[in-house]
Length: 289
Ligand code: NAD
Image 1 (cartoon, rainbow, N blue to C red):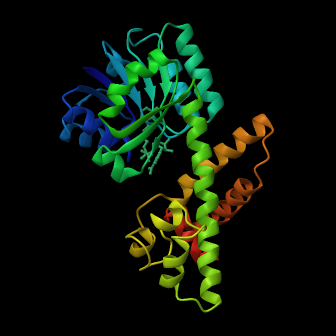
Image 2 (image 1 turned 120 degrees about the horizontal axis):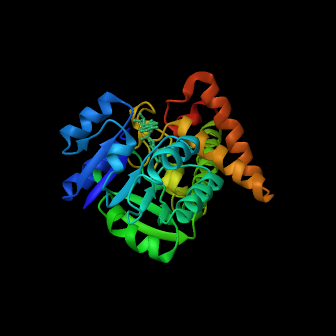
């Protein structure tokens, strides 16, 4: 299948490579020359504009930084330029309102579109083991599913347009809050004189258990291998966690939802990032507690 791929950064680079590996003809575009060179090394054909890349494409996939860019790219260079028979798959993490607006505009112009944000970081993008949360009609989901499957281990239909983004930010709001709660508990356990491995052994089998504890423990040398064992480098940057919490707060404000824990998590990650830790793994917030 001829697939146009727009946005070949940390995530999109690996995803486009996996589509090429699966036998698709990938027509790739990014503003960065380095990203284009890497895509060529990974078997993609590269183009000098979005409009060129989407010409004659049978599907369009994007992995871009934010909603404003997604809107500009789709409204300016994809809708009306790609064949209407090509489904549009935006995998970026963006605000729910923009995802719904772009999908509605695409539908008006005759395209099927899904929002398909991912769970899993750069390693999962490279390995093709992402989880996709998909918003769109049943028909659009059915067309997107086989393409997404070539880049991930799970593809879940969350509901109508925007539902993928809604699921993603609600999930990451839990993650931000539980990571901070887990860090606090380890810091308190330490001050109370508990051995931290012993506390992990207890809490990971008791009601304090969560993914933040058992899969991504913020304490070096405790639990499975995690960014804590690597000086909080790699993993999921605090700046990206902050981005997702901001999107969650924006969405909560738009529907009048009461999210005090999410709000506090946003404030704490804001302060953490402002202190120069935006590039540090989000579990590194334990150093401030
Ligand atoms: P990135 O900054 O590495 O990549 C974005 C790419 O988009 C860059 O290469 C940039 O040059 C390109 N770009 C920007 N504007 C463009 C345009 N107009 N046309 C073409 N290309 C353009 O970011 P990333 O880490 O790959 O993240 C991409 C998306 O995935 C974001 O929405 C992010 O929130 C989400 N996400 C990231 C992670 C992660 O761990 N990095 C995890 C889950 C979701």
